[in-house]
Image (cartoon, rainbow, N blue to C red; front, side, top):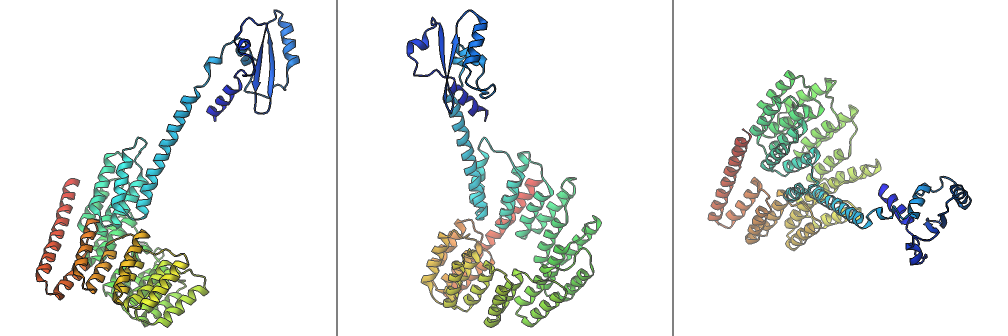
Length: 509
């Protein structure tokens, strides 16, 4: 604001071009005529060179065309300086100031462009591109390390199955002088847990214990408990509960829901009921809608529809109200059992209660038709989904690709993959597995191999399902040498992962 004002005032004090050149430059004249230009009018002032000071003051008062204080940018002193020929050489260098402002604006625009590009890559879950943009950002003069940026990247790398990159990023953060927090350590621990690297996750926990400002909390333990349960290491779950008790950390509803779900999936129904009974009697971990969802999802996935419906009614009697995800679980369970009438009834009930149909709602319906190769109803559901402005995700296209393959419509598999590319759908392991499944179904082994190579080129880690589908396709064609090569590659990948983990442990030490 100050700069703009000084520019305005400098312009207002320029001599008028209407005055002849000789009159402007002459110092021998008896009077100097000063033109003061404002936004609204031009004011004429006459500065007399008479010897009588009293006559000069009276003349100035008579010639005043404004009230005192009306134009704060112009004073009698400034008028006198201009009349005497002084002060005109100290104008603000407007041209240089404009260049400075342009450079500042360009730098600000570039900063916004890079940060927006990073946020875009993170949102689209493109971890490799996100790291490249982040490296570009760090080279900029305006870069300052921020905890929020590192947190987002750590979470992204964890969800993308890249714990080694997460560890490297964490080490870089420490080198830049950013102080670690319990949340940042928990994000790193979660990255190892998502890749089932439990021993490494426990080493992170031990490191947190010895740092006074990075002590683990209930969320840290809950993430680690979930990893142990997913790996069926129930013995470690008990030891973690003991640690929490020693540190006076009380398990919350989230923790208990994780354990409840784990026991249920493992078929340990007795332990599951014990945990549920404890939740009903607890004051700190009472069952909620997530508890309800875990239980009905357990029986729904097993195809035990009657048990699912029975538990649904029990939780309603406990006073727990269903949510959108609850209905989506019911729709998915009914779809897998091909009880389409009940599936439709739940969807109509959702509309009646003003519950929105979400992407998951449509995905469950599309998946139900995909499993049986009902391309007609699958396409109808997908079209309705897009007509309602619902955004499709990776699972949507996985179901579509598998559905067309099951229906024998392989040309539509190609168009669906192309559409996924246009919509910038995240190409994760599940997506490539769906395409490989389609290639195997069509007995197009050359295309299957091209997809597999593209998968690795995109740094997308094949999983056990990938190798299993490809091995079955090769066995069907009697290509035992291909099966052998695939098994060797699978073992080499496992060895490489172990080496990376050990190297990461040595770096930490």
